[in-house]
Length: 260
Image (cartoon, rainbow, N blue to C red; front, side, top):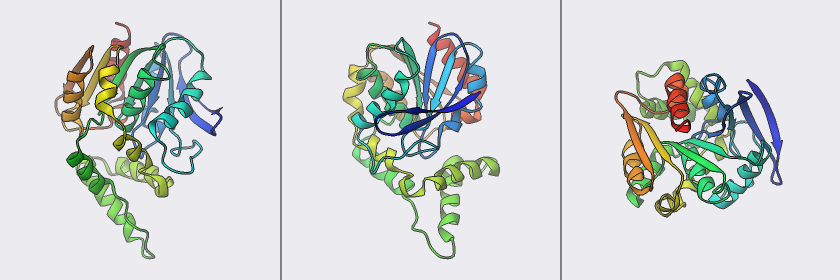
């Protein structure tokens, strides 16, 4: 696996990459994680394709914008990073906020290049659902005794499930703490995006792969009905963050999809 940086007009974008031949696939993580959500998946993908996972602006080791981006700005920033790897056909894969990013790339900046769109937890949300998510993801104010750290740990363990290994809860919390002041900016990018209209514009084949207990499983089911050429698969007993917790399964489903 390789790691590196791409220069854009807006700042540097950090990436992880694996594979030297085959289809070109770009992957985008959920918030407030980073592209290392795909570190376990990339070796499986790299056997049959050229896979690149980006830290989105403000997350991981990519440069941060001055404020939360709108989707057009997010897509242009990442589109320039993608251009570094060539101008040919490519497939896109994204989880949660990353799924929204690939949707916009597929219908706008990369509309003539995107061959497949692979979604896990696309946020097709109504006002009440957005209000609910805002309550869940809201960050605690820092305090001298560090109680906010306990609160964030408890929130993440509740969201991810009490059966989740503690080292994985720790990983997710550390990723969030690295970018604490802007940890939830990408959610605002998604909350203000017209996902329904974008889905109706999507023309490439789409596949929604989601765990039964993913917080956005119902959203994926609704989204698959709006896209023209889409299918959905719900994995019984599985939760969220498939690229991290189910890397081989995730990679095989993606590879099978893009080979069609």
